[in-house]
Image (cartoon, rainbow, N blue to C red; front, side, top):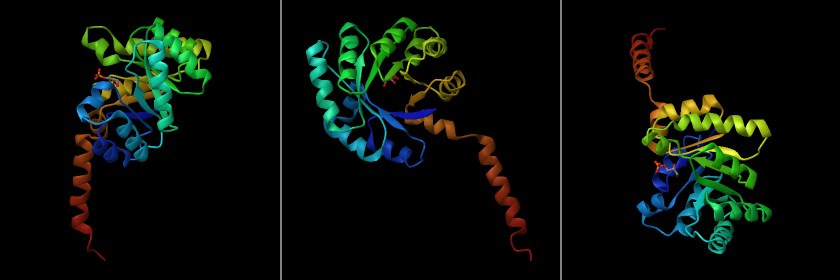
Length: 216
Ligand code: G3P
């Protein structure tokens, strides 16, 4: 399973990239707004840290506007994947961009039907938002299971990028189901590494070693 960081913060990206388990980065307009920087500058800076797909989202909602932004983003760096919302113009944009060799990430996907359309349009990645489904008492993980089954049935190449992840169980369950990628906030990656029994075990081994380390 590939791990992406769902943040536009450079300090966080540097810290977790050093763990050696970060395969890409996803951003969205809200994450960029938090950073108060230009999108172009931030995407280029992220590309200097992580050598993998970096999602940059279009703001336009009309087709010519979406295509113009997408082509501009794609020029910034070879690893830019253009994030396009799931709607009529988004679908059209994904098909056109695919023919131009521009990678896309079809975002704001909340149903199996939308996921099927994203794959048929030729999106490179598709982003189902599981946390936002859970937030409204729907079952985000059930959507991931549905998508894995549908894509396997037809051999679609579109990769499932599980997004809107809220906690480590989301990552583990998505991995059990066989989703391709999980994009997570740094706090979730941080929680994946920790376990109280690991800390206790290290401490115990060190204490015991102290008792024998000087023996000949
Ligand atoms: O980047 C898209 C997605 O991961 C957003 O998550 O927490 O705003 O629902 P969230």
